[in-house]
View 1 (cartoon, one colour):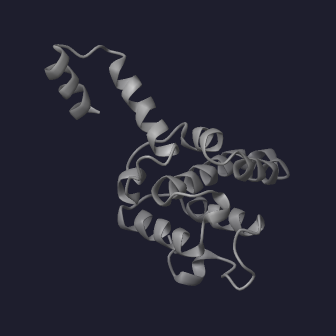
View 2 (spheres, one colour):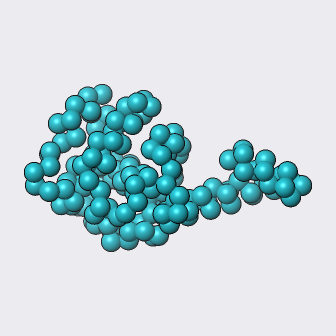
Length: 155
């Protein structure tokens, strides 16, 4: 956010303390509204506290409601895992467009491979989103039951 705030300071003579928050909120809306599609490496090197929540509100209420219902049927201890999975799925939507139902196995493979390249940690939590999409019936029956079938989730 340094570049936009520097531009604002140069253009308008100053940047206010709240400008960074406004810029981040605006960027989030542009991404969730499918106006901007950032690359996976960029998305995976930032924190996205509200990405899944805003993506659900702006782009796919039904898809994220199905994910939430799936998570509600699990033990309470997995609530954090469900949130991580929702954020991973929202990251795919941010970069690829569409809705939860539009995610394909190749999107999951690309996400996990990019996570590996930029050394994102997470173990099973890194690939749990694939299992949740499978449980929702997003993938066809012939799709691999695990992302491990691609040899990508070995850490």
